[in-house]
Image (cartoon, rainbow, N blue to C red; front, side):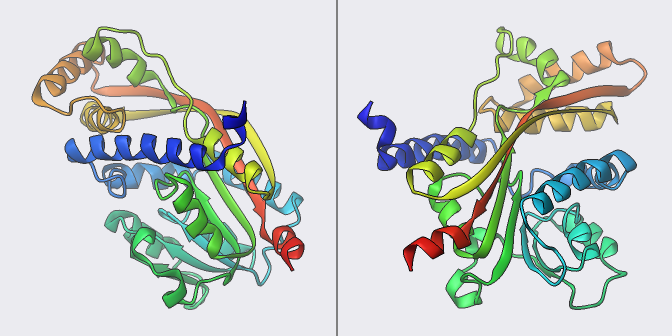
Length: 294
């Protein structure tokens, strides 16, 4: 039971698991910061659709319900993508610094913020991992640091760097389990010979370490789902990317297996994908911690 309260042990376990996953992805030729490039346009369309805006608004309203005021606030949006949150932050009066490195997403982000004043949304096209927080002047510089479903968060050290930038609040979201994905469930038995079973992810490490280290936070776990239709080519690309994320061989054998299956199962050329799962959100209150340490 003592290990349950041993923060160093939990930090090491998270780091070891993350390092293993990242190393396997690199061996498979996948850069986590660029794995979204091929679906940037589709992601942008979904994010700014009526349903996408409703999802975003639900999160924004939850944050406001926790006491966050966006008018005149400074926000650091890490992994901003095409502006799914940077845009509504700016719409509610915030000054936004958007960190994004994917060229197709940056191009879409530039389009989506074109109607704002020039200094309201600033794009930083540099990986957050490479940014020196002190040299950049970002130490406790932002009222809210916002990190939604980003590979930037992969161990406790990365969490500490994100927290370093926040003056009042820090929001982090990630899957509780790998996203439920109908295509994954279909192809997993073909590639592995076993039925697909999801495993819990890093959200547990994050919440437990925040608890052990004395942070004040609000957490929320929701179940969400969506349905999309993509071409067979896009489905194949998504499936191969997914294999790399889940430490399976991204090779010609598996590509042929998946391509043959898609051709037989979806003769129309359109693949309907159902995605969903449990997602965790946590809002960390930095000013509460600072008040206790004065």
